[in-house]
Amino acid sequence: MLISLFYIVVPLILIGTVATKRQPNTVFWLLTTIAFGSIMAYLWATVRWEMVGIYLRPLFPVLFLIAVAISYRRIRKPVSKPKKMVVVLEVGIYMILLVIFSGLNWFAFKGYSIPDDTIDLASPFRHGKQIVLHGGASPFTNGHFHVKPQNHALDIVGLNALGMRSTTFVGGENLENYAIFGEQIYSPIDGTISVVVDKFDDQNPPITDVGHLAGNHILIVSGGVEVLLAHLKKRKCIG
Image (cartoon, rainbow, N blue to C red; front, side, top):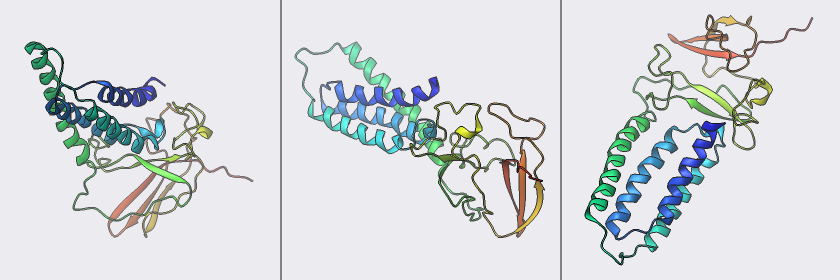
């Protein structure tokens, strides 16, 4: 719950600060805009938006641009000259933020690049809405990146009408809360099914079967490439 609030509160604080802080000149306005904008860009690229609603992702940049426009119209030369130490400190903070988040953004947006040795895969879903939770060529966007051979694995979650993966902010232990639970899957590539495992009971979050991390899964072979569909729901046999 707290992490979900963090994803909402931090962008709102940045937007509110930009909109309400009266800048003494265009240089400070530009410095503030770029520094705070770099933080907003990093949040846009890395925040778990499916926890609070994916539709907030494009909304916050729009609100930030509105705040920037409001801030520009409020630029006023101060009545009294600010102390040099205060000016130096403020500029220093902005520069530090800019350097740090420029580096973080480079690593984060690197995850959106496409490696040369990729293959085309279709979505394993044909109904509903889904997004990639973990994926890409960067540890900032893909929690599997440093775990070979999972470094290019994709974690896919379903979205409900509110753009959330679950009917609750934290997801909870009830699997029925999750939009993707029970969705039918399809092969993302033409190939041959070589392995099918369907014997493990469904695990309620945050419980993990450390002895069988893939859980129920299907392995598909196509042209020397293996595609693993893991963490599948156990089929209920009737008979």
